[in-house]
View (cartoon, rainbow, N blue to C red):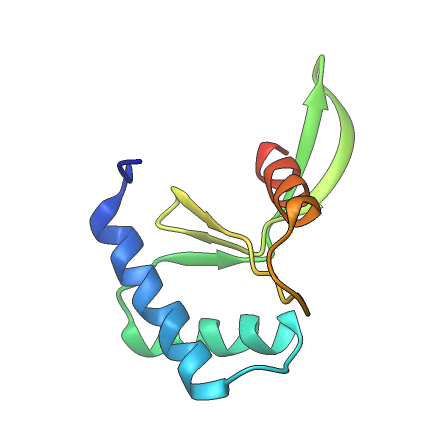
Length: 101
């Protein structure tokens, strides 16, 4: 599958892997989240918003509030997950559901 924002995605991946390599495994999502924000700030060239609140609307009425982990470049949503096992079907279902929202 071809990436829509290939160059931007590569830049983000570099930061995500750098954070993972620096911290290793065993921390909660918030720890990785804060460390990734620090990386973005140090880089200075990653436009992002952290934990922005959005609403799912139906007929212009709010149905459900949700929080984006990170919105980067006003185009790419980063959904951070810490799981204790291999990525299994329910993980995909949760991820797709949250991205649809």
